[in-house]
Amino acid sequence: MKYIFVTGGVVSSLGKGLAAAALGTLLEHRGLKVVLQKFDPYLNVDPGTMSPFQHGEVYVLNDGAETDLDLGHYERFTNCELTRNNNLTSGQVYQNVLDKERRGDYLGKTVQVIPHVTDEIKNRLREVAQQQPCDVLITEIGGTTGDIEGLPFLEAIRQFNLEVGPQNSIIMHVTLVPYIKAAGELKTKPSQQSIAKLREIGLHPQVLICRTEHPLEDDVRQKLSMFCNVPIGAVIEARDVDHTIYEMPLMLQHEKLDDTVVKLLGLTKAQPVADMSHWKKFVQRVINPKKRVKIAVVGKYIELQDAYKSIYEALTHAAASLDCGIDLVRIDAETVEESDLADSAGILIPGGFGDRGVEGKIRAVQYAREHGVPFLGLCLGMQVATIEFARNVCGLSSANSTEFDQQTPHPVISLLEEQKEVTNKGASMRLGTWPTRIKAGTRAHQVYGSEEIHERHRHRYEFNPAYREQMLQNGFVISGLSPDETLVELIELKNHPWFLACQFHPEFKSKPNQPHPLFKGFLAATLVEQA
Image (cartoon, rainbow, N blue to C red; front, top):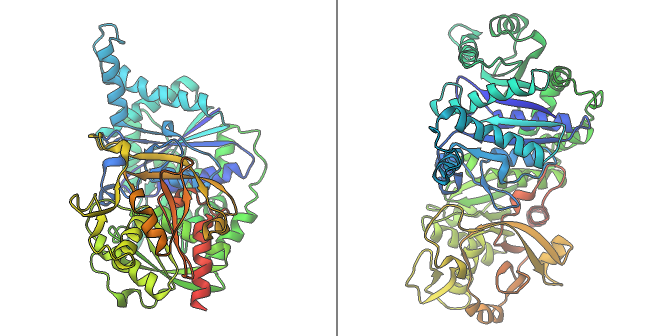
């Protein structure tokens, strides 16, 4: 097995995760089996309790792990199915070390960063390599070189590289080459300083991914090669993509990144060239669609692009499959008005927690229902659709969720039974993949073409079965239930062109050439509406 470690320097948000995922795509298309993982230096055990404003979306895996959004890139760009072992944080590392110390596992030794913390990090590398056999294991190190909390991870990599040998492991450093407008040139000094910082730790990158807004001319490449001690062929230009992140693998292939990595690691199993023809066709459909449609997304974290990252990507995948482009209208749920929705061919309401913006989301659902606009609700989107129907169709004017009003006389959404005794917030929701039985003859059945599906969940509250009959009598349709028929998973409306909402998160299972059925069905309906 070969190992690639992806580090970052100069500034954060350079796209290390995308670079790792794009390399994974290229290596897979050369016939290699690739697994990716992320090491996050923050002290949270996982991002599950972090605000989207702090961290972006929480990406949920099949096994219920709440992970960094970069794992979403990994699963979308490659065929690997990840587990909780593919995301390690400093919080997990220190928690494990302290648990072992309390049990007496260290036999009276003084517990230190070296070797105990670094051993814990190396153990995770070996564990993933053993549990998920592959040709190449790509590990992204979060944060920026020089961050104090990231030092144990870099030290662990130094030790690990020594143990497996230089022929089996390389470091790919993602750095910034800024353009100084006043000087009219690209500057390499920040990258030199970043590499120098790694060298102090004992790490020597073999590949340099240079994030830049301008082309890297030969003299700049030569300078980076000389001062960073990297072969000039391994100085890779990674300019800002023109249209979509899915151009990244094609850009890196043009720069011969996969050739460089295959040569450095001696990957003799690799096919001579990555056949990216299907990927290119997908990218072309994203860049040059034959038609466009306007979609309103009504959310509470709308100003932060990464808060709904997987939803936006799922819309892109579905749109490309229909040779359609999307004009996204991002609307703040706290300030939404009917006029904001008037020109949209479809309305989507994503998940969220807390009462801020809920009444705005309910108004958006009402508009979609009354005006026959195609609607897709996800998680909280299903719950607000239920509340809106109870209030405005069933006449239960005070209907609400106990999450927002514990004294509501009509709790049409209430706490899951198993959640009533839960006190800790972290990793305590209904998480991961659960089965759903779909009712024949419903729109959901038509969309999925199956009687049973498996989708990923992240919620504490559910549809209250005490209101089931009253809702059904008024045209509410429950089209998906848990196998024991206790939990409502999918709802829709009679006498509406296209109105579907789900308790789960379908966006986590969408891929570029495998769009999710719900998103594809929703967009197909919006095209009909627009026409």
